[in-house]
Length: 103
Image (cartoon, rainbow, N blue to C red):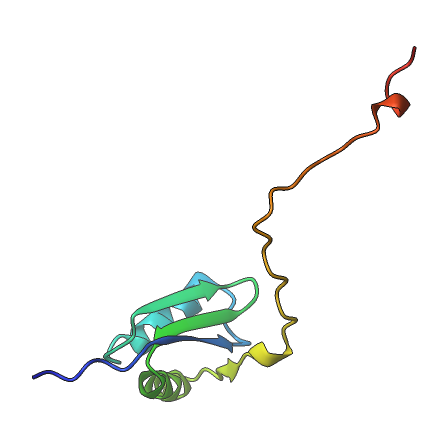
């Protein structure tokens, strides 16, 4: 019987020195040996990296990034405002055309 893999989550990090494809390549090389990373998502303009992996693997990834000379800073997702629920009701638009129509 095999043990199920731990659940993966997305962890976000700000990497202040990551602003071009060269640093992205360095980060990819640094994380290549870390087993268990399901995906990486880079936003170079915002200098952020999202890692989809189980928590233990994320800890290994952070250590690998630091060893490569980067300073990953966890993003504070708790400070983000909650999203408004999406309504399931259809939107109805009503316009007062009298202002647009001349008689």
